[in-house]
Length: 308
Image (cartoon, rainbow, N blue to C red; front, side, top):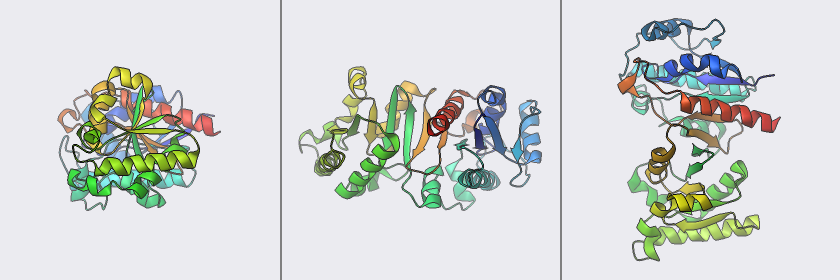
C-alpha cells in the first residue's frame, strides 16, 4: 500500500499549484496524494497554466472560488491558503492521511486575511500545543532553527538556558541525530566574551546540561557560525542548530537550495514542505522548479515506512 499524503496547495497566486500539477505523475508512483482545493479554483489555475488536470488528480473540496491574480498579494488567496492548510491538517491529524505536505503560503496575504499566524510552523505549534521545530535541509546538511520567524532584535532575549535546553532535548528526541553542532549567536561565537558573549554562556550551559541528561556528547558548541559551513567543517558535523533564521538558512540555501526541504519536528504527525516561498515573480509562467517538492514527498514516504 502506498502512503496517503494530504497536500495543501498554498497561495493560489503563487507557484504551488503549478508544482503540484507538474509533479503529480511522478509522485503518484510512490504515494497517493490528496490535494486540498476546490474543483472550480483548480480548473481556473489549470487553464491559466495551460496544464491538463490528470484524471487521477484526487481533490478534497475546500474553500471558495475566486479570481486568481498571478503574483499578487491578496486577502482572498491568503484566506484560501489557510483553509487549504487547515483542512489538510485536520485530515492528517484524524489519521485519514499518513503525512502532510504543504506548498508555500504568503505571509503578507495571511496578514491581510487576518490569519493569526506568521506561517505554518507557529500554526502547527498552536494546533497541537507543542513547540514545533523548524528544520530545513537535505541528507548533506540539516539546520534546525532555535528561533524562526521573529525579529532579530528579539532573538537575544530568547537565548536563555532553560529555553535552549528544552529545545535541544526536543530536537534530539524527534530527530535522533547523534552528532549536532550548536552555532553561537555573536560573531566568532563571541571570541570568549570579546564580542558580546552572554548568549554563548547560556548556550554552553544548555549544551552541557543536555549532554549530561542524555548521558552522551550529542551536542557540541557554541560553534563559530561562519566557520561551521565550510566544506571541512561539514565533513565533521553536518547537523546544526542555529540561534536565528538567516544565520542558518542563508548558507544552507546557498549550498543546497534545490534539494532542501522544510521538516516540522516535535509533532505527532509527519509534515514537510518546500524550502522556498510563493515565487510570485514567476507565478503562472511554467518556470517553477519541482525538486524541493518531490524531495518533500520522498521524505514523508520514507518516514511512513520507518514508522510502519
